[in-house]
Image (tube, protein in one colour):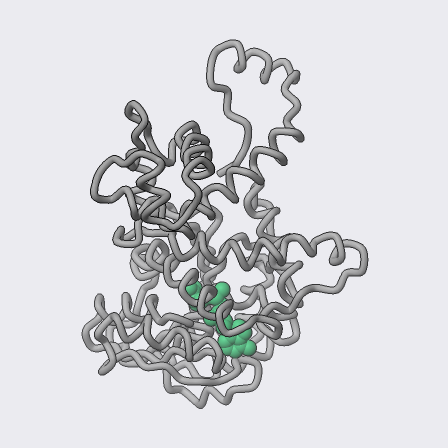
Length: 346
Ligand SMILES: C[S@@+](CC[C@H](N)C(=O)[O-])C[C@H]1O[C@@H](n2cnc3c(N)ncnc32)[C@H](O)[C@@H]1O
C-alpha cells in the first residue's frame, strides 16, 4: 500500500506520467493540512454532529462550539477530500466517514485519529532525532491524558486487527491459558477467548497502561476470563510451562535486540510443550516492506529505543530460545502487518 499523488483527470494523469508534477510539494503542504483538518473535525465532534442528518456550517459550529465561518471553510475543504459531502449549503456524512470515523462504528478509527495530536508533537521532534540520534522513549514521557489517548487509540486499531489475528493462529486443541504481553486494552485476548470458550487470558502491561486500559477491557464484559496483570515485560518472571498461547503484539519494536532475546527466552520457558508464541508486528523491517514499512521504521526509531525488527531476526530469537519458528504470515486485511509464530516442541 502506498500513499501518494492521485490524478483527478486525464490531463493530470498525463503530466504525472511525464514527471512534471511537483510531488515533493504535494507530499508536504496539502498532506499536513489534510491530516490536521481530519484531526480537528474529529476532535470538535463535527462528524458526530452530522449523524442525525445534513446541517449547514453555522449549525455544525453551534453544536461543536466553533466559529461558524472557519467551520464552513474547514468542512468545505473536507468535502473536496471526500470526508463530507455537500448538498446546497448543507454538509452530509459520506460512507468513508460513517465507516471509519464515527464513534459508534465497529471499525471506528476516531480514537486513533485523536492520538495523532500526541504524535504530532513527537513527529515535530524528528529533526532533533536525526541531528543527535536520541529517540523519545515516549512511554517515559507521556502525561496521564496522553496515556489515555494512547490506550484508546490502540484499542481502535485492535478492532481492525483482531479478526485476522485470531483466524491466523493455530491454537492448540487443549489450550487453556493465554498470556498477552504488552496487551493494553486486552481486545486481542477478548477476541481469542470469544472464539475459544475454554481459554482464559492474562493481559500484562505497565501500570500507567493498565490504569487507562482497565475501563476499555471492562466494557467487553469478560472480567471472569480476561484479566489485567501489572508488570514490566523486561523483568517480569513469566513462570515455567504455564501458557498455551502467548501474544506479543506490537511490542518488540519498543525494545533492543538483547531485551527481545531475553524476553523471548523467558516466554519460551513459560510456554507449555505444544504451545505457540505469536509475535505480531506492523511494518517489520525487510524486503517485503514498502513505503508504509519504511515510514513505520522511522516512526518506531524516533519514538522508542529500538525500531522495527525483521521477521528473520524475530525468528532467530525464537529458535535461540528452543522454539520452532514457522514461516511468517502476512495479513490480508491490514497493510504491512504480519505474524512470526513459533511453537514449543512437545
Ligand atoms: C503499541 S501498543 C500494542 C498494544 C496491543 N498489544 C495491540 O496490539 O493492540 C504497546 C503496548 O505495550 C506496552 N508496553 C510498552 N513497554 C512495556 C513493558 N516494558 N512492559 C509491558 N508492556 C509494555 C504499552 O504500554 C502498550 O500498551
